[in-house]
Image (spheres, rainbow, N blue to C red):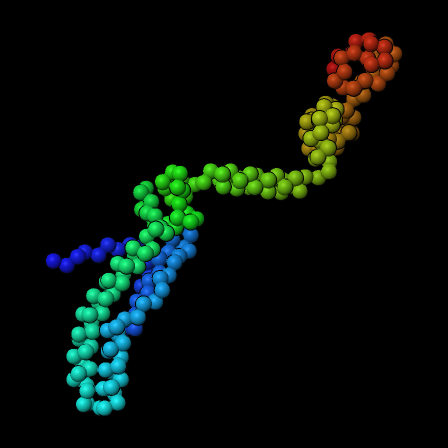
Length: 218
């Protein structure tokens, strides 16, 4: 009874009549390994007889035909043997993921800790680093689109003192930190003064910094 041949899907057969060669590649990164070329004895014998047949006309043509038929069976057997040897030689370099069944290279695409390919179990350190880089790029683009005025609006002091959503007089919406309403001209940021000594106060001040008197409401 003939022995069954185990085969894998990530293989390319480069064999010819002259010999055998195979290449195995990673389903994830597509990098691969190619086995050394191993000459075929039956292929060499067939080439010699075919050459002799062409040199001597029909004298050796029947012998060449017999050789070709014999070579086919012999070559196939040698090919199977070479393939088995190539699979055993390459196996340590690849792993089959039990989750997705992909054949991946151990060097770059296998998560040894998780026992899965990195498509099914990504390297968390790599993913975190990539996520941080993506976030940094997003922030750079967002910051580059901001005007100087927008940046000032985000400062704590400017936010408290100058940002007004709508005009208190006509109700017109204010898109930026304007000092006067674009519709009616009303002053948007009213100055605040101490009713006791007349000193100018900050909008959020509760007491006068000059005399200590309680600041007016509003």
